Amino acid sequence: MARLIRLRPWMIVAAIAAVIYLPGLIQLQELRSKRDELRSEIKKLKSENATLIKEKNLLEQDVNYVERVARKNMGVVRKGEIPYKFVTEEPTR
Image (cartoon, rainbow, N blue to C red; front, side, top):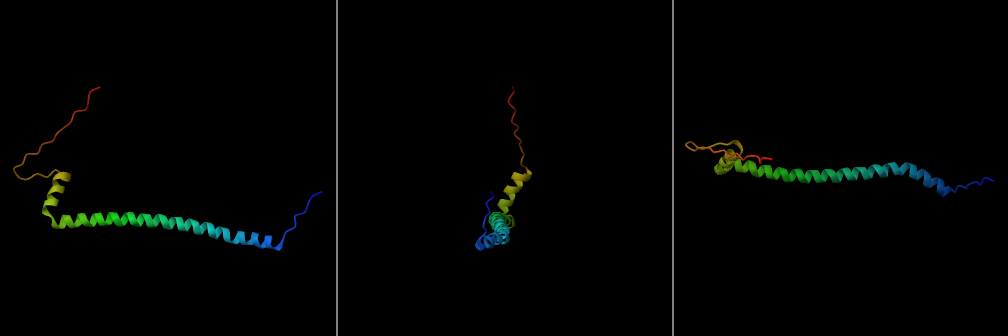
């Protein structure tokens, strides 16, 4: 014979509570995870911003630094200097 499961009132209440609250709990966990990711991103961006501010200050105030950057990144030379470009050969096979 088929056995009937007797539902207790607390079982019904628990099932209704699960249906109502579980989606909210899942969304809460997702939001907390997203918050943690955003906090990490903010920390990284603050560090990058501080580095850029330091470089900006150097470029505005330190003439020697500006010269180093121009020489390194743009190949600028002083009047009378002769630029040399060293080419390395690829190893032959």
